[in-house]
Every structure is written in structure tokens, then in C-alpha cells.
Length: 496
Image (tube, rainbow, N blue to C red; front, top):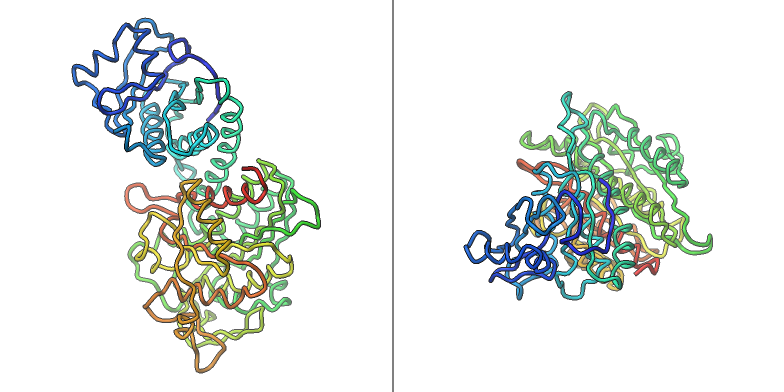
């Protein structure tokens, strides 16, 4: 999809379609009013006859209106003006793009920049327009023998009505394109089946990304990890025929002396639960258990395209968790890279076992902050559903930065406690710590387990079990939390 921005009156825009907004109560936006004047009241008549109510997300397509250069005019309902919000703006944009995709239009100009959104400027609107449009148009048919028909819609223009908004809109569009490309890459990796997207495949794609965007990359194999002493990570891969990999990506956008931000992504390319075998129902969705890793790869791509003035390191521990005669058993004790011993009471709590060694490895970079991203606990879905990610942090300032980035990107998170009280549940009679703490507060005890390996830097943990993918008829990876992570890094780089 080609995205561009333009300053042009809607009635004079020569394109296959122009899109304008209508609020409930027969209220025209300035762009819709311009179309109405050019057509001598066609839109006013439509509203008066009750053919368009203006309810949020509703659309009405009109053809060859007199006085309008475009072949079509698409009206999109914006809802009540007093209730209009950032969410409504994104929902209406999505509805408009989805409606356009169902027409024969090859291009369209979207005139929603004139709709006021509290505390959001033209750059925000252009950025979210691009991200939302790309998300609405995304499809995954790589594994099908018969591909879907190519969409006729090839170009979308984000139109502005004021010259003073043009530069900001162009900037927002470039940022949105980079974030959308990162999300698409994340979704593609997440949607691939486990027999294709193995730890070795993730490593190959990381090397390919590094070549394309001039990143530094290093891939550690099993012998390298054994030499380092990553006993916790390696305990998870023991039952699989797929060898583990540990991927290190470097984006160098600032001076060498500047401390990096480190992103750590859980990369379990398929999770059967190991010896603590999961139920068969919906087990196919455990191919999404590497979405934390995929989000790190997607974020690194977005950061590189935007050329942020920041050093960013992506660490991806990646394994397959399978039951086998060599697999770890409940009750086994392993020694982590940190030297702490771990009693594995449940082999299905494997994500924290690979993350803890990666978090210890992160120390060598003397980071300014570390954020790990993981589809870690079903308990997080019970607590927060599929709306927001769970956030834990050992520094409130870092938590506030990530929460703000979530609001800015509309990829929100909610902070949960990380109190010492919960560590009582992780006590073991035989090792330094157990890998589970029982059913109560499962997301919290998982985060508390990880916190034991993060004492030397500012750290946050994002539990994306409820947000990394969708189930049901729209099953597939969501691309989250690439927008949150990228927004956070943009702020760190001083870009906003």
C-alpha cells in the first residue's frame, strides 16, 4: 500500500474516492460541508431524508456527485461530536478503509484530519491513520495454494485542509509507515506455523533483517549457550529436535558511549507445555508463543527505518517446548546463567526459564533500561482480557514512560503490583526458587520470578498473552506491542 499526504480541497480532489465525516445530529465536518456546497446540498438532503445517521463507523457510498472531481464520495459516521475520542477516530478510520477495500476504487483521499481529537495533532492523526489502515488491510495467505485476489485499492492519501498541518502530517505518515511495516513483519512471523517458524528460522529472518537495515547481529547456538552457562534456557529445549538459538540484534543510532535500551522477546516457537502437557483444545494457537520475539524483530525494523538517535539491542531467546524422553521433568533443578538454581515444578511455565537467562545476559550491555515482552501467563488474560497488556516494573518512572507510550500509540498497558509479598509463593525446599507460585496471582508471581534476575538495571515486563493474537474467526497475530515499544523508543530518542 502506498501512503501519501496532500493539501487539496475535497471537492477538487481528482481520485477514485474521497472520504469525509458526518457526526450524529446532521453535523457536517468542514470537508463534508465543502462537498455539500459543491453539490448544492446533496449531503444535506441525504441527512434530512434520514439516509445517513452519522453513527460511529457507519458508511454510505455515493457515486458521481455533481460538482465533485472524485468518482465516489464515501461518508463515514463519526458518532456524537461531544463523545468523539481517539478511539472513535481510529474506529472510524478503520471503518472507512475497510469499506474502501470492498469497492473498485484504486486510490482514495481521506479527509478526516479536520475532525478534532482532544490533545492530538496532525502528526498523531497521520501516524494512526497509516497504522490503522495497514492493520485493516493486512492479510496472510502465504501458506495457501490459492492466493486471495489482489486488492484494487493501492494508494491512500491523508488529506489536510491547512498548510500549517502539512509538515506534521508528512512526519506522522513516515513514522506510521515504519510502525506499520514493523507490525506486518511481527504478524507474518506470528502467523507462520510451528513447522516453518522454528528457532533456526527466526535466526535466519533476523540475519536477513540485519542485512537489509544495516544492523549488527549475532546468533548463539547450543554450544555457545552451554559455554556461557544458560542452563535454564537450555532445559526448555531438551525435548525438541529443533536446536535452540539466542539472537542478539544491535541498532546503533547514537554514540557508542550512550547506554542502550534492551528489548528481550520470548521466542517459544511452539509450546506443547512439555511433560506438563497442555490440553489439546486450541493448542494450535501455541504457535503464537513467540510473539514477544516477533515484536522485538518488528520493533527493530521500525526503529531502523525511522533512524532513531538511540542505541537499541534486541535479545531473542528462542526454543521449542516439546515432550520427549530427554525433556525436563517436574521436580528437575537447573542452574541459570545468574548462578541461581530453579526447581521446575511445571514445564509449561517455560517462558520465564528462557527469559531469565536472557535478562542476565542483558547486564553486559550496561543498559539504561530493559523491557521484556512475553506471552507469559494465561492468568493475565483472566485479569485484563484482550484489551491491554500487563505491565510490571522495578522502577515507577519506567512504568510511567511505558504507560504513556501505550496511551500515545493506543496500544495500552495496565500496571500490576510487583511486591515482595508475592515472592513467598515462589519458595522451594530444594532450590533457590521455584518456577511457579500456584494459581493465585499467576501473572504477578511470574513477574516476581523474572525480577530476581534484573537487580542491576531498570526493568519492565510486558505480559502480552491477551494482546499478541486474536482467536475465533479473526484468528491471527495482532502485531502488538510494536506500537507501544516504538512510541516509547521514539520518546527516549527525543523524537517527540
